[in-house]
Image 1 (cartoon, rainbow, N blue to C red):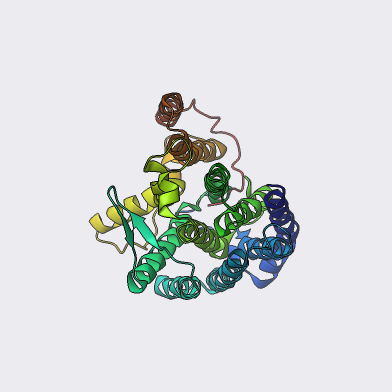
Image 2: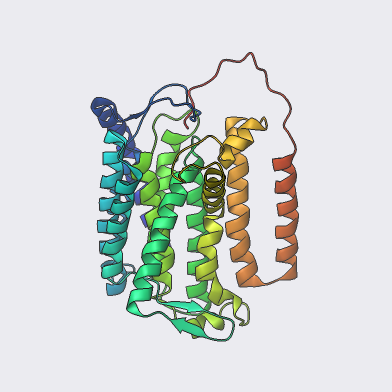
Length: 376
C-alpha cells in the first residue's frame, strides 16, 4: 500500500507543478477554449491540462518501475510501458484537436490507434463471465471488444467534461473505487498485490487530484481533449487489464465467503464508474438522433446543463454529480464485496438522499451578482 500511495503522490505532485507551465504554453500558442453558445464559461480559458496529466502518469510509472514491490512484476512493467505509449499518442491527438479543432472522425481514428497499441501488446479483455460458465474470448473477439470499450470510455469522459472540476473529480472518485476493489481482492485472496490495474488506478487518481486545484471553479485552465481522452483511455485499460491478471475461479470464490458476484465486478465496475458519462452519451445520442442530427453535433442539454437549468449553482451541480459518482462506484464495490444487508440498506438510504437533493430545486440565488469566469 505504501508504494501505491507514493505513486499517487508522485502523479499528483508532477501534474500540479507542471500545470502552470502548460497553461503558459497554451496561452502562447493560442490553445484556449473560446466562448461558445453551449459553454458555461464567459472568458477564454487555456487548454493543455492533459499534457501535465500525461507527464504526471509518466513520472508515476517511472517511479513505480524502480520500486521493489511494483517494479518486481514483469507483467506490470510491461503493460504499464505500452499503456503509457498509448497515453502519449492519445494525448498528442488531443493536443492537435485543442490547437486546430479536428473533425470527429479524425479524433476517432486517433482513439482507435491508441487502443490498438495496448491491444496488440497484450492488454485486452480475456474473458466474460456468465451465470453458469466463463467464456474465453478468441483473439479477434478480444481485440474487437477491447478496442470498442476503450473508444467508448474515451468519449464518455469527454462528454462529461462540461463544468469546472467535473470530469476531474468524477474520474478521481471512480479510479479510487476501482483501486479499492483491486486491492481488497488481492488482499482477501492472498494474491500478488502488485497489479497493472492498481497501478493505473492510483496514477489516474493522482493526476486528477493534482490537476483539480487548477480546474476547480473558477478554473484557471482546462484539461481539454488531451486530458479527457487520456483519462478515458487510462480508466479503460485499468479495468481491462484486470481480466488478464485474475482467474475467474478465484474471483468466484472471492471475498465475503464465495459467490459469483465478485466475478462480475471487473465488468460491472467500469460501467458503474462511468455511469454518469455513459448515461450522458446514451441520452445525447438518443436526443440528437430524434432531432435528426449527427450524434457528435454538440448541444447544451447534457446532465450538468440540466442541473444548472434547474437552478443549481456551478459548485452545487458539480457536488451533486460527485455524490452520484461516489454513490454508484463505491456502492457497487461495497455491495459486491461485502454482500451485507446493512451495506445494501445504507446504499439505498444514500440513494434516496441523492435523489431528493437532485430533484428539489435550490433556493433562488441573487440574480444581481456578477457572473464569474467558469469553465464549460
